[in-house]
Image (cartoon, rainbow, N blue to C red):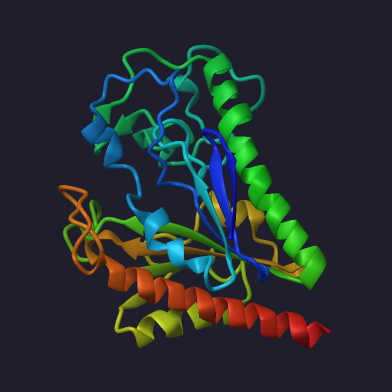
Length: 287
């Protein structure tokens, strides 16, 4: 296994014989850059992190897939949001092009989150345009450029690339008419069938169901920027978001891994083996 690191931005682990499969973890980083000035406590900031997901998927490399992990936390800049998903009212200054804030951005969870742990403010002063440009240029784009490069190289070499964007979700629905109800064990997001071949979604669902997990599709999260930006089935790049219920592997209050964490790791390694086998078969069929 080869490991490559861009300090502060990402770590990549490459298998000895890579299949055209990428598992990437964009929202589990815990290395806060020195220019991040926040009034929030570390405990509150960490509540927005998909904790331990990078470790949960550590076994994918042994299965033949490439593993990519963003070091920086989404409280600093969220790699799973569009680069223009910014609330203009949250800026100190004027952005030089039209912004595209989503409804979630108005609640404080856009590209540059302004709240954590639900309602706790992250800043006591608005970030400047220059500060956000720095985060985009030195963290967000280097990470996404690496995702794009890997997928293009896989597609060029094998005729297709298979991309799994890996996240975790809280066990309970926080708001809306279903607030307080338990989520499924895994929710698969392919933006309603537009970012990958449905055969990939079917394979992942069937594999996880086989372990006894309850799996839903496009129910809580249809897939955000990582799959929207990179998924292009018509050009041979297939992207699927996987949301894993945190209660499967950790205590959501203490962030401590549960005793059955190794079993979840083993199941995800087996999932990677199935996806790698699927990708190799598809590549072989193309000749």
